[in-house]
Amino acid sequence: MYEDDLTNSDQPDEDLLPAERPRSGATVIRLRLGKLNIETCPPLLMEHAGMLQLEAKTACVQGGGVLVDNIDPAGAEALVAALHETGEASFAVPAEQIVPLPRAVPVHAVNLTKTDLGPLDTVGRQEKAPWEAAIVLALGGVAAQKEERRTKGEGSVLSQPIGTAGAFAMGGMAGVALSVSGSAMRSAMSAETVHRTEQRVWLDLVFLKPLRRYRIDSGQFDYSLLGDQLAMGGDANIQTLARWFLYAGPGMVTNIDAVELQEKGKVGLPHLGEKGYNELVHWLINLARFGKRPEG
Image 1: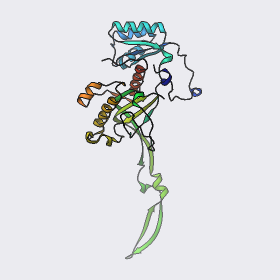
Image 2: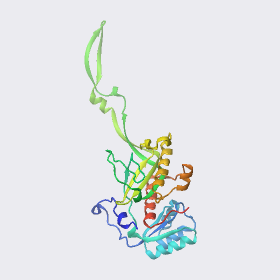
Image 3: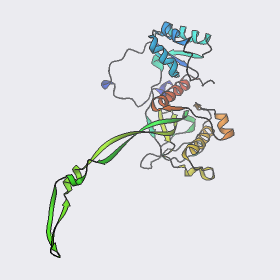
Image 4: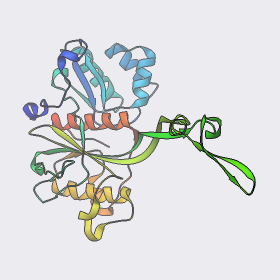
């Protein structure tokens, strides 16, 4: 359905990538997220996907949507059938048809209309993103890593070399005015990179023609377009945005309960790391690619 559009992603130069096994196998995709039964499912992955025990248990605990990738097609079909017996819905597709994850383009403002998202780039230029080409809306709480440059002191500047500014006498008392040299002050300070974790809410939108992904960070967006629906915090405002977007693009595949969001104005969100969130988006894109929607 989306094959021509979904393969046009922003990928690195293939000449710079390590050689990979040909994607001639099959990929198993689940219809819901969450941990798999740690007793019954690892043996199935070991038997049909050729996983080691620890690898199989890890996959079950992580509970991702793309369960196994590029395995033997017969094994993939057998795994789907075995998972079905345990109540886990999934399907197998050719691995070569899996859509790669496009990079996330930060968006801080939009000119929203009934027909177009109207994302603005960093210099205020508007791109075209018609709702009829929107296929995915992902929303989740994310523990995001933030890098900061900080300057810190290294001991007292009084221990650094000093220069004599001059001598003076007052009331018979002799004194020396001292100044800390510029080089001494600079050497007394040093820069360091600090990584800290921030709790954010991210909203990703995926469009076709061409395939692209826009990301809105709850703390870095101009919510003035919400007007009288503007709330105090970004976490509440981004859910209002999601409600508006799903109304404009009702055909989008999403990980949240769109009906509950429309009725109540907010929904519970998954809390993930950056890697887990990107895997969520990748899963939703491939559900859309194969005409599926999440269950449960």
